[in-house]
Image 1 (cartoon, each protein chain N blue to C red):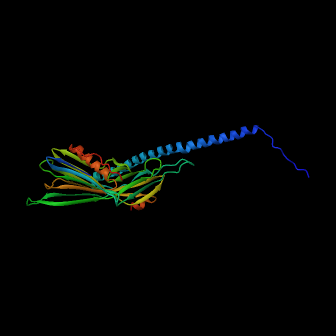
Image 2 (cartoon, each protein chain N blue to C red):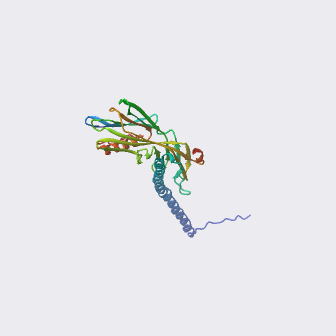
Length: 270
Length: 64
């Protein structure tokens, strides 16, 4: 039986197509690597930072909506009819298809968070001419938080708390939209104004979509006190994760109004 | 951490913040003193607003 033996023959024409294919693959892989390692992180970092700034603006709009309702309630007094305002908040950042997953944020309302307590004594004159010391104690609670666990940019939170919008990061926190806390020195007397905002209702939503925060001011109680015992002290106490921001805000406002200086910013990190 | 502002040797205001590691929270305290001889406390306007918040798929439930 005859065995057919094929001799391999050399053909240099095949090298060109093989090398060309390998080069094309290398170019493709290089291009993919460039996209994955350079373009996508930069794109996502910019998108997350942009979302954080946008969310801050949306919380500013939420604060504005609540402030306007408070103003309307004060003007209308007993004729006030509560209305519901809807404020949009974008929760997270969309990803880059195939290359990066979305960054989901979480928006929640906690009616027990961030208690503020204001306590002081004022005095009233009795018909006999004696001074009667009356204690006052008011408390507010509640905060709305957007938690943004950024992966490419700095993770942060945007918080609405007692009329203030706070931006929080691990390396710092600051009040970006100021609450109503006015201190004036007029005719060498001190005039102080402070608003408490209690938030009721809890809820949570997570994702990257744009959701709505409904707010309805259903009561306001403005009071003015103008007679104080000689040793009176107004105490304002607050407990939350954003105490450093409040510390700087209180001190900055009082120092600017009274021109009495102030401390350097605190350095503690959480 | 605290700061005390004085005028004429008297405390005008004191602000302090302390960190509670176990709760990961701060306690912020502000005292505004009435000093009739230096800067008397003229008036305090305190406004307390009550706000109903609704978040989520059925925010109307929170608004009832």
